[in-house]
Length: 483
Image 1 (spheres, rainbow, N blue to C red):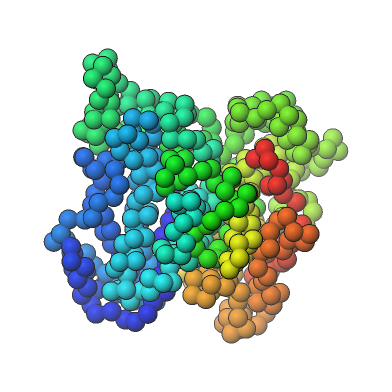
Image 2: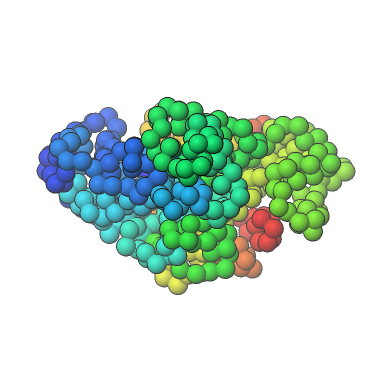
């Protein structure tokens, strides 16, 4: 659930920066050229629990050193602390407290980042998994009426989109009262006084953390109890509604992506036939209609003559990952794919579509297919230093992959330049610049184009360079309304 802001630098600031409430002393890590976290808001404890972020107290000092670009990594509230919701909480506090933390940090960036050498007019927000899902929600915040006032670019790697309920629906309300019960705040006496929220605010932090962990880990496999909700203010509607039907969006350009095998971590490993697949489907998505289920069983059907040999695939060449991967075959792999597409893959296409069709906006999309291509496998080559090991990748690949992000942050376009080709592989890297990475035009266009980022699958000699290919048929079911 990594999440951060990247701000293009303007000039080198003075070693000490005074923000009014704190003075920051410069510190430079020469090996990694890294900066240190900043405190953008007061700790959300006591009466500040489940409230909007408040400005930090004065007279604190932390270390910070300028760089280019500036990187702001934030801490936001998680679990019940960040995403507890019910009618009572909405009346006395604020739902989506974790998203409010992110929003407050963006306001902090606009107010102060220039003093550290950053440019508030060139902010890119970035995240992976839940962090990418949060970036997607910020792109829709306040009905898209923020425009580019807080950021211009979004990097959304495998954006996580769980079922999103209204703040007072039965699902978040049930989690709220289970959490309160576990924390000792649902006794008859407390309930009679109507002070459940007050009890939670005054409860010991360790007790609340234990209660949050318990409720989160005793639900359905692959699901979490505390997730963003539609609150009618910050998050005004379900993302799938907004992204699929159009409307205003925040920011100007986006690069979104998904991994080849997003599903294995989140699906039980006991789906052996069509019946088991249907039972899992009913348990995992209980609100699906019978018509929806029939359509899903048709779309994800496993042929009787399917090959049941686990094998790597890069997603482009046969065997495709629809029925085979190195982790599963047949109906098990079909379940992996359905969960992946409903939760990570389709949202990455929907948000790219939303920016692509908006005048004055730009979008790019790619699939990370370096075997095994599991959820999160793209993080290591994305953030590791080029001379450090990455998951299934080498130095040439990592340098090129990081240039993609860097170019998008600095230039608003991820395409590699000829100079960058020479720098990473002596001109031999098959990557975006050589094939001219086109902007994403939408999966509903006659010939949608994206990029496949991979190395050769196991069983063949691995190409030491970055392989990027244009895909003309994503073979996705994201356009179906039941997802």
